[in-house]
Amino acid sequence: MKLRGGYNIFLQGRPGSTIKAMPEPKTLYLPLSSKRFRFSAIHVADGQDVALGDVLATDPNNYDVPLLAPRAGSVRLGQVEDTVVLENIAKSQEYADTNGRMEEVQHVERTFGAAGAQRRRLMMLGAWQFLHEAHSGRLPDPLGTPQAVLVSTLSLEPFTARGDVQLQARLLNFTRGLEHLQSLLEYQPIYFVLPDIKSEFASIVRNHIRGYASVKMVELPLTYPYDDFAVLARSLGLSSGNGPVWALRTEGVLAVDRALTAGKPCVTRIISIGGTGVVSPGHLRVVSGYPLKCITDKHVFEPHPRIINGGIMTGEAFGPGALGIDTECRGITVLPELQEREFLGFMRPGSERSSYWPCFLSSMVQRFAERLTTAMRGERRPCISCNACEEVCPAGISPHLIHKYLYRDLVEEAAAARVDLCVECGLCSYVCPSKIDLRAQFVEAKNGIAREKAEMLETKARQESTEEVNA
Ligand code: SF4
Ligand code: SF4
Image (cartoon, rainbow, N blue to C red; front, top):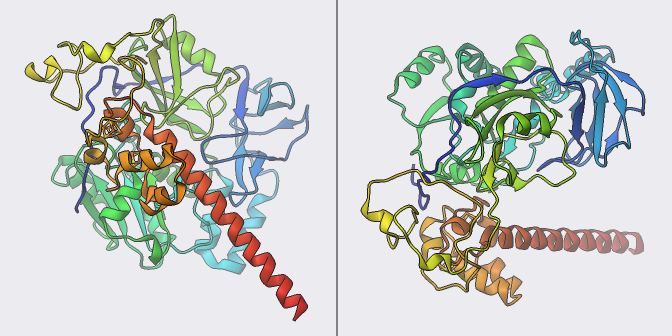
């Protein structure tokens, strides 16, 4: 497997392997938006009592993926913007298929066969949301046919939940999940990605999956962002032109097992809590909607923290209105927010600061984990054409060149330089000595180009249908 770029990021505050259970919440705050989903179709009314697993809302632009009630309780709408609030959380948390939803599965089975019915079941029980289309990052079509499936046990972005921790004492569930995944496919291969295929863990898994001819083990170096699904798909030669590639992480395989073996909704996640502003970085078992304040009160010691939904490379700071954990949250990162501007910080390359470039005194001492803050080591500066961004870019594009095009509003040139191949890993922004937020610029450009393309296709389709009517 050929991989290019990447960088080993060594920072203090990496989550340890302990999993702490949080106390049962009194109220849940379920955000109606997350990174990929917008649950705009509300299925419940204000004041309605719901059971665990009931559908609160769905996303009409993502195959009606549901937002499930993680606990039984009473719904409050309109109390908090863009959020479903669940109050009076009930003590008994038995899941019951009260809405006749399994009848719908039988209907799908008659139309699309057993594999179709299983995929529908995964969707209804909240497990399908753990799947990604590797190249686009979107939710895959549950009735589509993939060319291959990628399963990764790795999580290389600093501070996000670790696959080995999520797997603790659940190896049987994991291998059973792989078996279920195989039953959803016809002959397509499943690539199982591990850091070391000769390790003890790999041989245990190999023994469990001995009979699964379609599962192939793939070794991956522990360098960010080789766990990115688009990077993985490209390095395995799985081009988007040959059909979608489904991809999921450890917790996704465990969710598949939970939904198809136990028939229960997947509403609990093991997320990380890490960063230099946390008392003891580790993992937490929480349901979606869990109050953010309960977590930060218990784990954050920094008086001025920046609290990020996800890791430092791809996460976004929680907004002031964010009250609960969304359904896609993989971790919470807490960094000390710098209170004073660090004037000309880049001119003081001391021994306690590490850098991609060996220009800091720290390159002369042994490798150490740096205490990260939100400091940028001085203000933003113009590009100095050092080429660091190009060296680390796993997509093989020239971030500095694209940055220069976009800076001058030359969007067509940026498109020709293949900004669309950017996997949004953020590594270019991280290593850039001028602290240019290249990733944010590329995400915006990609969205703009995609919107423009969609509008052009729509106009073309409208023109063709008008011509047909007139003919
Ligand atoms: S250009 Fe995109 S893929 Fe390349 S390093 Fe930057 S964010 Fe990552
Ligand atoms: S890393 Fe930053 S300064 Fe260096 S070439 Fe890239 S954009 Fe320019």
